[in-house]
Image (cartoon, rainbow, N blue to C red; front, side, top):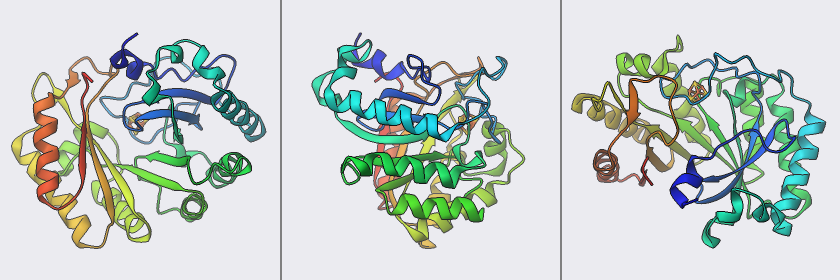
Length: 287
Ligand code: SF4
């Protein structure tokens, strides 16, 4: 299996685990241990590019945090002992990708929608801390940012702040119309932007922006310009943006009219972000 195919393997089922799964991640540049707090597939977005098939009913609906903790402890043990890299497909991973980068809240829905998210953060943070891994292993929250204003979510973010946490907040659009076409949600874009701003005023954050072709057509030039304007506004209003990840789909999206953006478009967008004085990195679908 080549590196390209390894990046496409994001199977959230790992052996008999319910919530914890390992992936070689493009954007992490190494091994990421995924935490699925949404086996029920709950999300308040319905992104056209989402790879979660919600036509298939979930096999598991509840999250048992003691089981989750045990699975994470066992997974860390497998990573640290090297046992994980004896198993397919990780045995094919090149040496430079065999480093543990992070434990990531990702999975089949929006992690902050999990009602015990604060408690989950405390449980997850404790596991690497018990092995003195806090400084070398990030805890990444991959989020659509819609619920960051909730008090209990804000408290959970403070737990992550003290545990080498990093927020990767989704921002795929610059106009309300395009945002609605992509995310198919009732949550207004302004609400998302306000949440990103407030989170980024408190700590340095990463923006993750996914671009796709719809019916073979890339986003309009005016849409890209509007998205860049939103980034500039966030920055000017005090949002501390460490990096903008400019990427596209690497796995089969839900909707057949969605396809990956070209490498050239991603390069161009990343270049325009850098012209704003903000770091940007493209991640290609064909990588
Ligand atoms: S926010 Fe994530 S999980 Fe939710 S629909 Fe979009 S891609 Fe899927």
